[in-house]
Amino acid sequence: MHEPLPEAIARHRQSFGDGDIFALVIAPDGSGLICRPVAGQKTECQRLSHDEVVQAVTELYGLSAFKGN
Image (cartoon, rainbow, N blue to C red; front, side, top):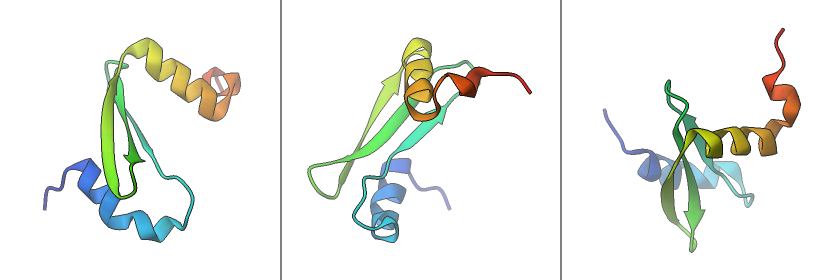
């Protein structure tokens, strides 16, 4: 069954408690989107450029996210 990401997040939101939940989706070309709750139960998605994806990953994991093994 296909379900759009905003609806899936809204449907499972109660599973994550009172904390904020979001999804950062990264496409193979380096662009992406971020989905997060806005105004209670509504979930909004925003497209991100490659540079914005790098910034978001850096905010989440720090510069160590870009180190090789």
